[in-house]
Length: 364
Image: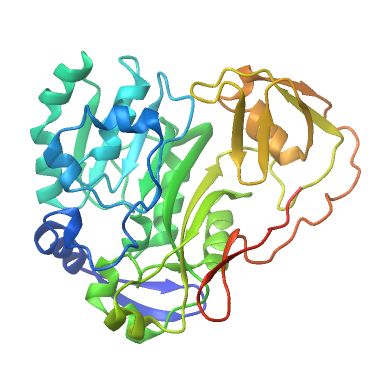
């Protein structure tokens, strides 16, 4: 199956679903088969995650491919859709935290991966004391089996880059989310639009690099889909430790980044000041004293913080509302917050030589 799409300002290209499915179903049989670190999670897992991973079947752990941690907070009772769930590692982790009143739906295009995920459903149900997972085979740009506004959270771990129809993925995620829901996902991004020689390279596609969106094109596509104010949670520079592949990619540079995209009415394109203040009461599980909405907004228990109207809505109109006190409304506008910039959003930067360096990114 070959799908032709228009990518932003880059012309038409062909992407073969079958080649990607073959790469993840047959070429890769375990995590160590990857040729780069693009589809790997580099950071050491926190202690609560190490403990939770002990309840994941070893075969599933061996077939994990991901570039970040897609573990949003406050999950109890939520319905979660995992796009590109693979063998189910993240799905089963989320299943534990949503609990017996929640539900996790996994979707992957690779029959071999789905077979592994389904094979261990009973094993995990016995481990947790409840069964709350289901797995479907299909493409992440086609969620026709999911009703409108039926999902609290959509997650994805290094899979959107593999889709030949990224606008379709974002539109479908927006459709299935409930009002106040979020798309919380990690993926790979480039500092420029990639040339045809890269876009047609099957190995670079399978390694999550050829399908990486130019970060500014991603922001445009997200807003067009309805996610008006994408929020960056964390990022890291990707080092392609494979000289042959690096040569084919030069001079492009890549990041792994985690984003929160909210389905909320009334969000504005930039950080507008309405004189609003929020106060974190504490208590979000595993973040009782301090919790970060994104890489610019960290809330300390008991401390009041002035925020833009968008941030106010992301707290007030979502599942996080019960942990905050809210002051102010939208009756008076004081202008835009200073330094609400439009430069490269990543806090981990490449210098001219391609090495990582750090620098601030503007926001409210």
